[in-house]
Length: 154
Image (cartoon, rainbow, N blue to C red; front, side, top):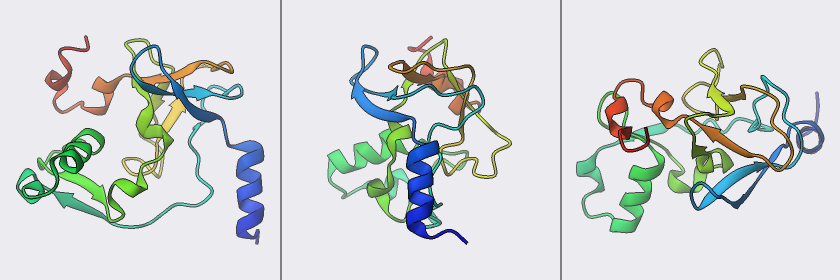
């Protein structure tokens, strides 16, 4: 069995593809630091943080600092129960995939067959992504239940 250090070094060698940078699309974006082959999840983790997700409602956010509440609403989209599924670690659990910007012609899609779907960056590259290219997704794909939320994007 591999040690945590071996697993980390393997991840750095084989599964680290991205960094944050200044986006021409919107604020901060995610950029490839080496080629990402088609079908690869560019956000593969060394280990899975299995902290539970807690459903937070708008009512629960009353009395929370307004900037913190806005971050919860921005980063944890409402689910079909009209609540925000937030990790027990709160905003401190966010990873680089939260900075992927929208595009109508994205180079990432959601891999619904992923055993990690809905919790751990279930993205895959739709094609070869070249070094220096910004990673993008179609935000409407994230909200199949209510794409009207994104009328202004289309």
